Amino acid sequence: MIQIRTLHLNELPAWFDLVTAVFGVPRAYFERHWSNDPWKDLNGIRVAVDEGQLVATVRVFRRRLWLGGVSVETGGVGEVCTRPEYRGRGLSGALLEDALRFMTEQHMALSLLFSGLHEHYGRYGWSVAPLELGVTMVEPGGAGPYEVRQVEPADRAELALLYEQFAPRFDGPLVRSPEYWASWWEAEQHNTWVARSDGTLVGYVSLRQRSTGDLQVDDFAAAPGPDTGALLRDLAGAAVAAGGTAQRRIYYPLAAFPGLEPLERAVVTGAMYRVVCPDALCSEAARAFDRLRGVQVDRHVWWPVDGF
Figure 1 (cartoon, rainbow, N blue to C red):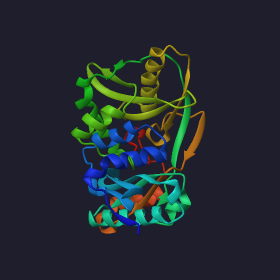
Figure 2 (figure 1 turned 90 degrees about the horizontal axis):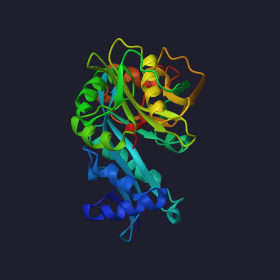
Figure 3 (figure 1 turned 60 degrees about the vertical axis):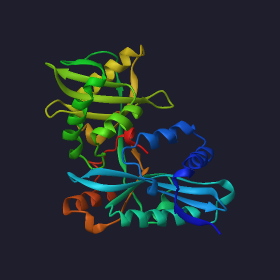
Figure 4 (figure 1 turned 30 degrees about the vertical axis):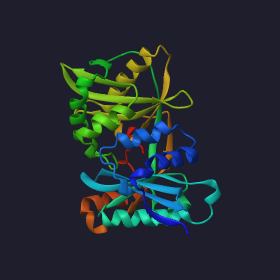
């Protein structure tokens, strides 16, 4: 009989084997996401076990999100997989229900996951929150009035402070602790550039190259005052120039750059949210959640550097 339960500590290597085999990505990816997560919780890894073999799993990531200007306890759902020979037996659904029980016991207000399987997760209460992206062209060079350079370790504390001032303006960004910045963010960030004015940090951007060769904004924050679109062009332009390339297409969340008119628009429907404990949502967060589920998505932002 297949058992649904918490992963045991001595089974962690076997769990890495399972997710590596099913997803077909390097084992180091999962090991990094475990070792660098300051809020990791073995009890959040739910598994299906058949005669001692791990055959399916779901992991709950402990997170907090900014929603309606409020920090909300959230369970991020990831690493959902089943060995091919065990599919079609309802194990994914059983594990999702088990994960929801765990999140309820932990009094997590929300749950968030990323998937294109909307019908499957919709059966268990998750609903799509659209994310609007813009696409524009960035010319190499040009730093405007700012001193622009690549990030240095000494910048991290200022980046964190700037982010904590910027992120609460939107619905969806992760709340980050100093430990998270030092471990997860440091390991996951790509090609980060900072802008200063008279020595004061006014903004930063992390850029990731997509499979098409285009760029995407992986993370961003700006001080009050500077136009975020102009700042993005300056920061990304310096990065493009350093790479020795001509102009590049760049994808960015529209909500964070309201003054940057896109050449193209795209709607991404991978983010899915679910209320777990309604009594843990204050009125501001509840209204923001209703916005996420509806058509008003002008405040919805998620930075891929925080992806799980």
